[in-house]
Image 1 (cartoon, rainbow, N blue to C red):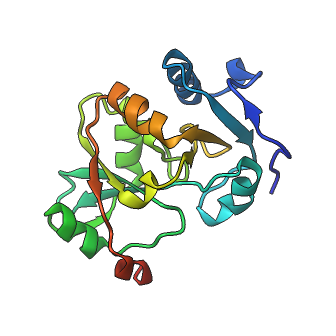
Image 2 (cartoon, helix red, strand yellow):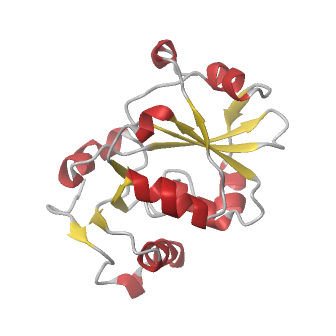
Length: 190
């Protein structure tokens, strides 16, 4: 897997050649005055594929999970530490909803304009009707920096967690629900 050997600061030099959805992320960050580093790499579809990217950026990458209820009427974006596992029934109980499952690619595209493997908190800027509820596991807030894709999985960003929570999320007009997934849930995956 190709990964650039070093991260770079600010907007990519080839900004105009990037996808519109990625450009929107850089424009938002620049307009909000947020500093960030990025690294380009081959497509990284899973958190496991991001391990070497984490080394270049010097930050853990946040796992972004698209969830929905059984009826596909309620949608959630769960941000959780990349190394933490969870059990959907535990998260369902915490948020008081019917059994959760993973959302499908069609709903992800409709709500976020993102395809599987590229999901990140920045997809919320495309959810202008606020159909997606943002869930953040408390474990994410414990890190000074936040690693995620800019709506495409061929680049990864390093941003201060405080800037994500205090500037980006309010700008995207989503109110996060901070949850705490218990440690015993880490041993279960689904």
